[in-house]
Image (cartoon, chains in turn cyan, yellow):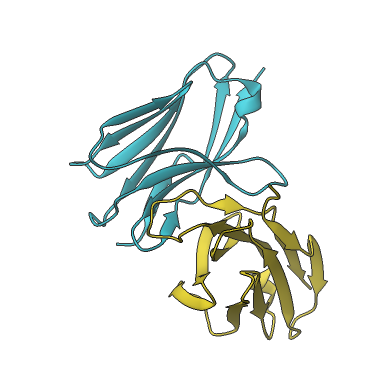
Amino acid sequence: QQQVKQSPQSLIVQKGGISIINCAYENTAFDYFPWYQQFPGKGPALLIAIRPDVSEKKEGRFTISFNKSAKQFSLHIMDSQPGDSATYFCAASMDKIIFGKGTRLHILP
Amino acid sequence: KAGVTQTPRYLIKTRGQQVTLSCSPISGHRSVSWYQQTPGQGLQFLFEYFSETQRNKGNFPGRFSGRQFSNSRSEMNVSTLELGDSALYLCASSRSGQGQNEKLFFGSGTQLSVL
């Protein structure tokens, strides 16, 4: 019930393409869904976040789509760039933040 | 504003030893959380401290403990180290703590290797 399931584990996308990472949760008490981006040798950093009363949030090339009834949410990276190559973690929060296992994204130049 | 500082950056220990990791949060942040990161399990929550009190705890054995000082700096201790404790240990700070839907600010972590 406390888990957040993230897929795929790794993803390779051509430069300019759309990268899509999916997450699912069980506990409907989660009320905040952030995405974190982590570069090698660095700690994760908040990328974008959404609350369950909103179906979509866009910040630049990054969009979160949220489906409350399906208990799923996804990150879309439009016009993916080599600089987007990183590990991405979805998360869900209630009294603590629970992270998915991460997706290693590689953008081919 | 200085970020979250973790020391040491790298640590090598042998089985059975104990280790202490340190985290200095961003000035003004009263919450410090600790996470264990491994390639297979991602980021796993260890515990959160807020104003010197443990506010929340993950599913780790009692060998993992922590504390927070009055200046909000935090330490994490692992006793009787096992090979499986090899991981990147990350700390994250925030102003009001987890459950407040705030941004977490992570340090760069301490890479612990247990031989």
